Length: 254
Image 1: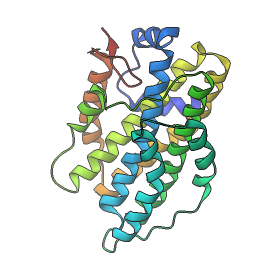
Image 2 (image 1 turned 90 degrees about the horizontal axis):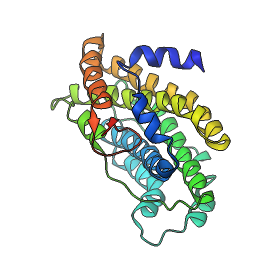
Image 3 (image 1 turned 45 degrees about the vertical axis):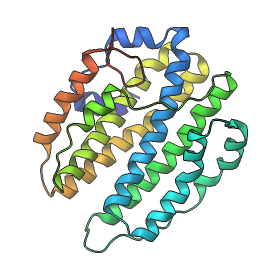
């Protein structure tokens, strides 16, 4: 675990405040934590899909991604959700090979596709895993909007290309790295099931942040440390400052 976390701690400008951990481990906040974590896994998959569809593939391949995401989006936006039926229907679906064709003229297109398709499969699987844990604990799923953290990070995206794509990839790296850091900090305070589950997520989340950074650097064609530093300052500010609401990526509790 320490080998995985050392580069993440070096990458992030601050650790999660102790006050957030103290709030997160209160029994009355467990449902909120799991519901928001569940939504975060789905949003991570949707974000990766958006990047692939916008930058790397043609319309026909884009439809393949939309068809892949459809059962998840239908589940999220339906009021009469059947969790057991959804889990039974989708449990093996992500083992299917997804063959997408890269657009001509985008040198990094195939790398973006291969890394993001793997990430999407894993995030969908994590969504299902959290949903199953919630079902076992009689915690109903709720669709939640993006919080202050996600909105604040996306405001950092520049408006011209390829800078916008590079920023989105760097931001993706920070979100994955912060998730990994929080899994590690939370795990010792949780029950055995959640402890084992959060520790099991560390390896994939650590790889996700590295994949995002490698793609950003490759597309930029050079050093991106200056841009990473700017976004890192904003990320640390959002994590350290007072946040009026509690969720998985919120700042210090009020």
